[in-house]
Image: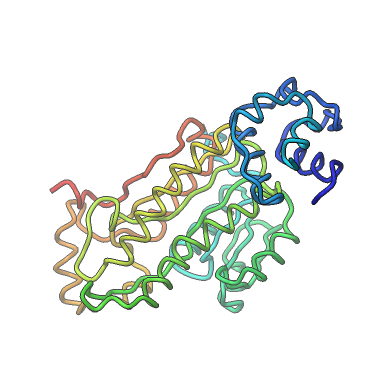
Length: 75
Length: 248
């Protein structure tokens, strides 16, 4: 299973215009200006590709930080 | 007004640039100030196209877009681009009752899957700028009309339109526009691969209200428009370019 650090990198890769944002496990991702439904879909697709795990929108909705989402992904 | 249609300093990838519509598009883009990256299989003919381009700063890569490794190597070398014109394509006439799985797969591979995956990889590797424009050369054959023997060709061209609309929707947030051009018959070397006598061709031209087949430059002009900021509010559109053929 990929590490939290790797997940955070992959998470950050889905963003195009957030160069000024430092992506950390504790980052509250919905506060990032660029966060929108397309990025949420990209995260779901990335988790499917990289972690072979299907997550739904509720899991994203209920997570606040990148680490919380990671913990759901590796459950 | 000139500025609106200018492609100055825009880096434009043109596939199928070794002949026909691709070559004409590359040349016209260069005349409008673009820096062109020519893609095609035949290196000699790409060099010929390169010689026709205005200004300097253009590049060519000889590659087979159906080969994943070729595409990956190309994208690694690529800097950021502002536009793509997907002009590479094949034509094959085959009656539906004689349709072969291999031929259908070849058609879809070249006309649909290769341009889709090339674009996907460019986007995934973040090699495309915001406010870029992607243009697919589709056809009236498929989306609007069809012809005897065109089952797989029409299928591939209709599929491209569906692909382009979805891309337009998903990429709008990045400011990337995606449109298609639907030409009717254009006088390129591909015409020679169609089983028609020159007499048939002359007769067929009479079906066109504007009196003739299109020229590669006609398609190139539409492509340049779609690449330029003159079309900055256009996305997901299929631009019909048919000399009036489908009006009757």
